[in-house]
Length: 115
Image (cartoon, rainbow, N blue to C red):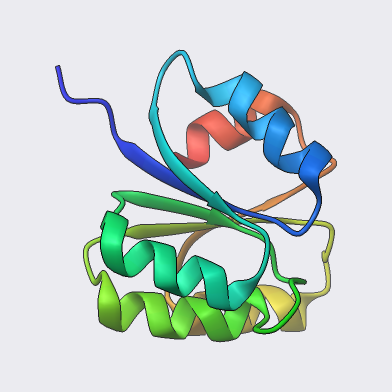
């Protein structure tokens, strides 16, 4: 059975490591990026099925990166996992192509449901 290929993006190493530990048994984690530009470059070459990304990242924020990703990897599902609960961020994320928006304070099973 094909495991979905996931690319992770967050500017905090602890968050990336936490995602790895939560997801590695059930998904194919193909890479990780710590800024928006690196995320876009990684997605070009890796062509993931799913991208898990944050709104706040250096060099290129997650919302702007998402707009680029939808052009480069139109079939990829974009799942925002962020601390930003403001409706303006949520709206902007979905306008940029998000498939799901999960708050970092959520339970792990909510991330699993989003994927």
